[in-house]
Figure (cartoon, rainbow, N blue to C red):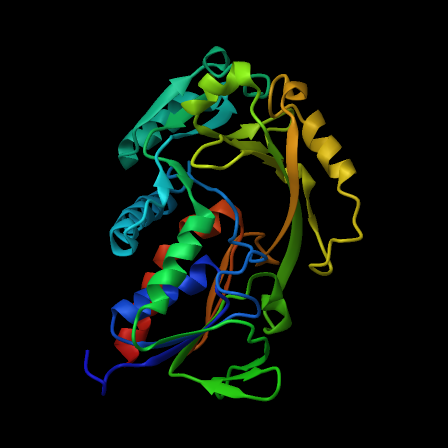
Length: 352
């Protein structure tokens, strides 16, 4: 790409979507500026964690499954680009009602996703809901989230034409003019911009997005169970209500446990005055792990994310030809970030 056709892309937010969009645009020859209110990467970012679960199969949504498989190919390419291991292919188990298992397995095979049916007896540490069986997706696994962010930031820092600007708080995004205003009055303007500031997105856009807060429990693995967990998959659909999930330890990370039952709307991102013990107690009572009393707690983390207020899912909206807004949640938003990045980079190229 020549200097006459290269664009200047401004990214607000250095989470996974922001950094990977910056990478995709830089690889396409564009000039990129990344504005982040904290350090880059930011430990307070929604994307920052030890793990994010990657699941390829979305029953009833063949297009979504195809997108996840495409995203997996992108993640494999990024490992080569960054020269770093970003993905642990440990498989993902999901509990489903017994009457749905045959149909889900058939759908997976049509989509080209290798799966295997498992019984509760084959998963003795996991709390499958009554009346369910499990489907193991073999190509699925976990993304090493904090490693992804560090690798992307490191790659960008070495690229000419890329400016990483930490500690730059954005106070306004003006869609009509494409101007981005920083605290202190500086104005940044590009040919295209992506607003993906995580919990702070709703402060900068008129889009109806909801802020959520979730409590996550990290556990140490008891010695008698260590060998089983070495080869264990990530798992979802667990606990009495089928809304819990667990990520096994590995690559220096702890056993991670949470549930949608402790996800709640929040007014702000300051959780310092909130007592987390009731949410931890609910996680323990949920029955996601069998014999959970044997697992010593190691840490409790509170995270925030935004989602489309209408659907509760991720949002990607092209507000104007040069402005995109992204609000994403949890593992699904992290998993599909390379697809969002590629879509925006393609749109920038077409407009250049």
